[in-house]
Image (cartoon, rainbow, N blue to C red; front, top):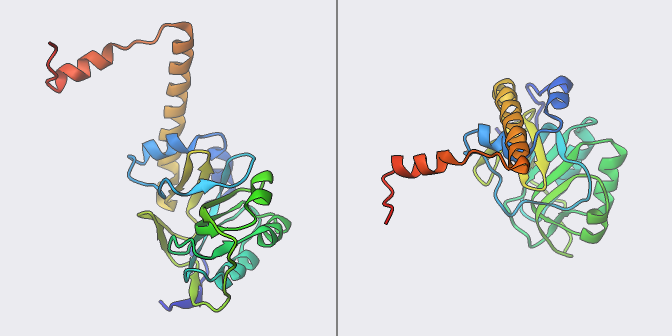
Length: 223
């Protein structure tokens, strides 16, 4: 696998799965993935709008360089989310207002940058999903190298092209292609259970006996 190449995704989640995941909080999906999958707390939303969801188009970019991000924006199909590992470096911005406008024109589902953005006020005022780890006014270079649709990792979270990407105010999570069905079933059940629990709390009927039992099981001393 070369360090300056564009690949074709072997598979990607279907629009049906994207639709089924609508409305599920990132926190619920993260929980059913055993809380082992996360892109890190620094990856924050820079937009005002609805949660992000769609199949991943992955980019490995040299820190401070966005040539392969441009290539991915032209390659990505409507609804797909361009996920960029730029090494977490925030010295130079990888995208700004112009590239986001291009993504909007192509009807993409969002952009995730493990690195910096610029034109932050304009992006924050918009509704197109953008996540990034920082902001700087310094622009990018366009020399490469990098890859499109090769596996990447952000904060220990491995992302393969075609995996399902979700993002909301709590951050970003990737659901591996082979786990989409199982994770959906478990996340839907968890979301329903938490909704019932919230209703019980509001009625003043929440059962807290489990706390005392858990403390006793762990050998907590009550003095």
